[in-house]
Image (cartoon, rainbow over all chains, first blue to last red):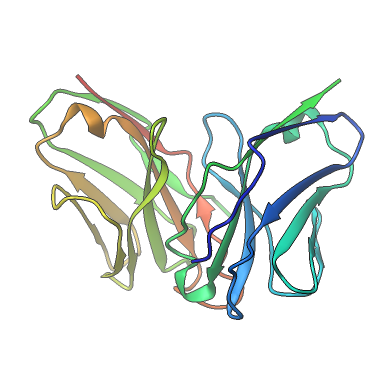
Length: 111
Length: 115
């Protein structure tokens, strides 16, 4: 799986958009970008994934650059409940059941 | 639809003992993966089972083992417990082992403390 790099921490005001970047410059053609988050003391929660097209679901949007070397997870209207550690993972669907988690980005949403 | 359940939620053991943790996946899910989470090492993959067969294994000693039953429920066992085995053990299930939408659904975890 390709290595991913994320900022250690970020802050966001409640109601504003949270934009979480991820660098995956060595991603290969068959690797997807997955995003999970882990709220304190809970199991990780799947958010979204994509291959090369931008994706949107009820939780977030995923913007992948054309060269696929980086991506951004967007939470359009962050709430206090979005405070969590966000993990960006690049892996093929064949390895999506054995995820390699990095250190992630700790997002703190504040009033 | 019920989520992934893990039992017990909390467990205290002493060094040298063994422990068995249980995971019930989401109904219809056939793949079950186990992870260990510690403050020092973060989230690390232990192993994955699909249709009662171990498909993938992480870099953990042989003291860590698992199995999956015909109803997809899974157990993991740790023998000869060490202090360093204190961790949150997470189970995740997915519909298939592989495929374009192979997101994993995690349970709440079992917090194991080894004294």
